[in-house]
Length: 248
Ligand SMILES: Nc1ncnc2c1ncn2[C@@H]1O[C@H](COP(=O)(O)OP(=O)(O)OP(=O)(O)O)[C@@H](O)[C@H]1O
Ligand SMILES: [Mg+2]
Image (cartoon, rainbow, N blue to C red; front, side):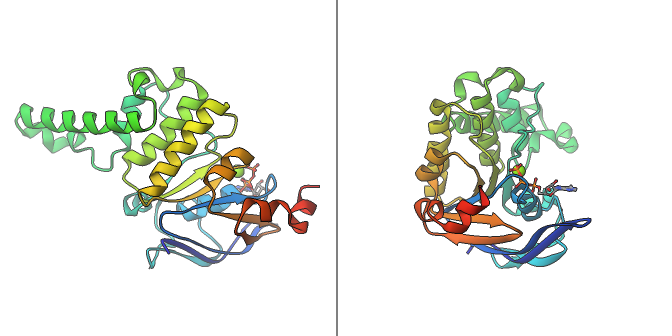
């Protein structure tokens, strides 16, 4: 497995959010993480991406323990994420947001100023071409030069995926990638996700939309009362008595 969490616990004061959470994410698969509001889904993603430290438990990426590793280092090691509240650089263009997400922005290093201008320009041109290719894959190449804050909500969600792609990471943790998106963009987001999964990207996705889940999920993880339960299908999850009780 690519990502493995064992016996994770996390409390905020008296609020015991995660009690004992274990799961394994397989290479080239999509696990959808479900649970009621406030059940701790985002907290779990914050822990897996290094934004929060667990009180107990262990996290391994490709077999290597990654507890306590800072988010930017985890990003370099292969973990990409999106946020429930998007977090794009709103005053930059769509294209610039993607360029910023490249792991080595060689053109931005200070010592590059010492190189002949042609070399720097060539490198920047290569990055721009790569970024445009990513934007095409994400169906947003036509809005490359628009400011991120000016494009539609669905396009911003696609841009989030484009930034994950640009970061070159192989494990994506997505916090509600289609929430509030209309069906047209939801299908585009599904298509991008399935395409990347088929290329070997492993995804853990928090999402509630049933059409989306049916389309992309290989397995369902249900977070309830601080523990995680695994289901092989969305149907099995929906028919489960404990699940039904949790949503009453
Ligand atoms: N940094 C924090 N400090 C204190 N409490 C927190 C913090 N982050 C989360 N919590 C609490 O932990 C619980 C789980 O929150 P979390 O955001 O992980 O839930 P969620 O399942 O993502 O909910 P939603 O479906 O609403 O997004 C909530 O009670 C929340 O108030
Ligand atoms: Mg959340």
